Length: 91
Image (cartoon, rainbow, N blue to C red; front, side, top):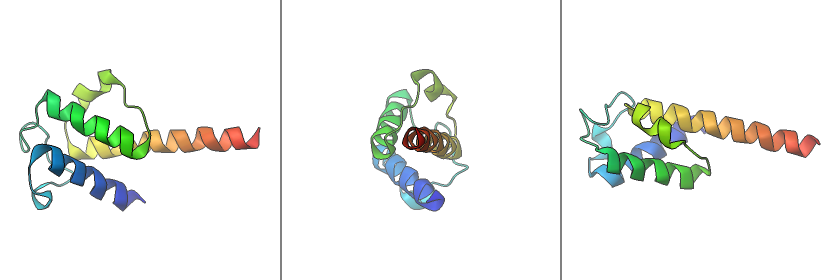
């Protein structure tokens, strides 16, 4: 599951940025390495939100500087959502 999220986020970034997936890694800086501007960053976030059915706060977007930060935040939100769903099933 973890590896899939990384690969899929990299795929989303490649689609939005036009950069080859092979040139993108977890340490890639969105602005410096991939030349992603704020509009493309929003496109990436929206695609990740749709794919994983999570909600990333608008104020968090400017803080996302690397691919790893997007992956980590997405995983964190997915885990929170799963815990909430599990708690609802218990009730």
